[in-house]
Length: 357
Image (cartoon, rainbow, N blue to C red; front, top):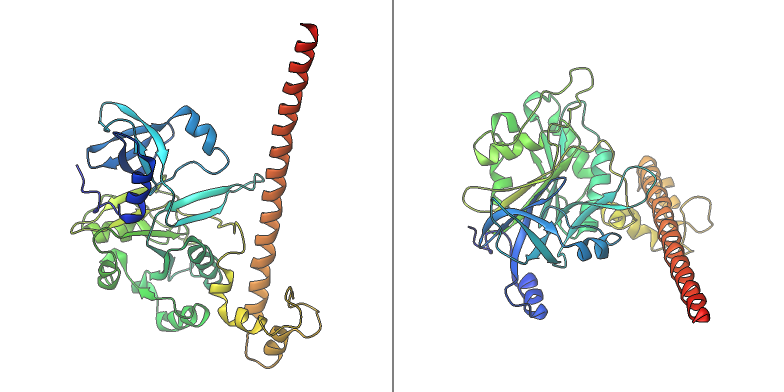
């Protein structure tokens, strides 16, 4: 059994529960997501749960619940029985990415997290542009962003790389760690207090699960060797998992991402706030900072105030995000047209039936 406050249940969720006025509803948090069911934790215990059939249909487009979500159960969870999820609480924060493929659908990576660490290895995995991409989604989620530069024990020029990240991500805390040797973890652990949920996101082989094990003080999360030729991991973590830390606080471990597709433009201006601030002086409000007259951003680049490659990366991410949004909107439009078409056909069948009466 768990104390709800220990799991992160606070006034935001309590108010929703009161407004529903459902007798006997049991709030629970999704701790893991499996193919056929969710693992849920509640004040009444832990167990397996499935979505009610009607709820699954209702959430098909809005997005099914993910790890970190709060749900209302019809009955207490038990290890030997699968209970039913009757409702899903509105989220405080949510980290989403564009799902891989051509469906243009949002994929929930972590829900209701307070702090998200973008984890990057100080080996061949190091890529400041990828860190900027992750930070854009973290800012968009509503959670507090931070960066972990892991594997500091094998990096000879780590001070230079820390400065590089700090220069590209001003105002975002940057931590150096060696998860393998449990070094540099004190500041990270200090930020994950009672009822606080932190998530680790990053590419395979960055050391996310090793970091979780170091914080736990035991080898609970599976880890694997990194390939020597490209420093890439092998996706040892196969699912998202919420972990309760000794002394309070929760960590959400996530599988490594080969690709982080931007779902929309949210968060970009927070990462590139220097460009956003200068862009406010552009002659056109919708300036693309390309060839438009009166572009203050291009003038700042020419004056050496903004690096040309930084503007180039900003425009690349902006273009990618807009393209994904267009595909997503087109998919929603096609889906809506199919629904209305089905309703029209059903109405026509009813008219024909009544005409024969």
